[in-house]
Amino acid sequence: MAEWRSLAEWQRIFRYYQAGVINTAFGFGLYALLVWAGLNLFVAQILAHIAGVAFNYVTYSRYAFADHRASKRNFVASYALNYLMNVAALWALHHVIASPYLAGFVTIVIVSALNYLVLRRFVFLRDRAA
Image (tube, rainbow, N blue to C red; front, side, top):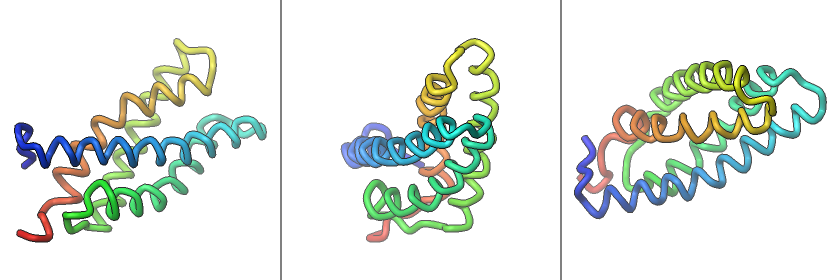
């Protein structure tokens, strides 16, 4: 379990959000490109999400959680859950936010904090040094 008072945990959270900025630029950029190309926003989201899973695994396992061993199976399962959270948030937000771009961005912001907790608790469990 994460120790919220430790400097190491706060540094890990900072690295997670640094990697998250890059991951978001990749995923949201692909989503926006697909919507711009005329795809339905839900089709665009799933395609961007699938491509983003592989990209995110690399950035999180090599940077944000570099000192942890990763379970690839749990990572894929966590991103299945992440996708469901994204779809639910996007579905709710597209009813109150007219822009599919803004709805997609707000979805990312909401789901990112939940994603950190899932990754930290179920995917990147043990320090490699431990």
